[in-house]
Image (cartoon, rainbow, N blue to C red):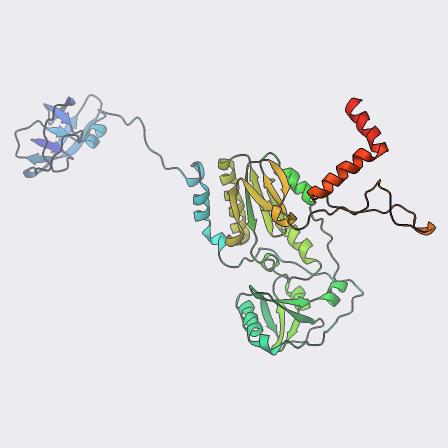
Length: 417
């Protein structure tokens, strides 16, 4: 028996229909059976040797390698031999697809961009601090810090130096600010007191977007995400000359910030400008300082948008805080509000304990106080439209409205026309 390119196993005939084909082998017509790999078993085939034979069909002539076996069985041609002789044709073929061509999931996107949520970011841009022409340099006298904080402050300075946030200053500088230590229960923070420097800084006056405009862009969406830029301002490097303006004194010498420090009056505007320039190509990505909101109409669109946002962040070396992210949610907390498909509502946590307490004197009720002639201008009260009046106060408002003659006329006009 001759077998062409056949894995060495024995063949049985379990009852399915065989596919045979006549091929001219060395000028002799031979009826071959197609190896469909459907009737293999585990019995070995005794092999005598191999040979190269010239095979001819109606259209193609090929030299094929045959395995000679000591069996009383029909000769077999393998699938590859049938293709080489033009006896069968491949009608369909599986093609590789890139991840971008396949529907993505949130988990896949987060897995792909793990690096964006680790480490400290450093944006591929710098900030220049511009001073007013008539500014006068200021060197603040060093302040003492409590002895109980010495070790912790020194360790935090060392950590900031290792992270590339600050660097020691040996040469004289015209500007030196005081160090401010904020000892919170969670962490000790080191800032500077740049009040004299702030008076000399020429701000860029970059417009900060109003929350109402940001909320309007979120309407009509059902899936939301919120990304938090880790350490915010510290991801924005300073120009070298501007860095020396942030020099501050400590009991262990002077340091300067290599990144935008908290406290400078131009820091929020510079950071907002950087965030908007980074994501300006995507209208559904809305940065508000270190909060970046994403909104989409469905989950698949949101996965694609999330991948775009993280791709941009990776390119710009922007890092996010994994502990503060809200990803692919039906509602998110954003700018003190709860954003969802139903609309925008005040965050219950923010509103709690801050209900609008209406004054004891209603606007049209008789005022129990007596004003002199110089102070008879009507008093004005500024109240947030998002504040909530208490139930007892609403009841009182309703009762007083029903008793007010002018409001009764207005009520009849509105209800009856």
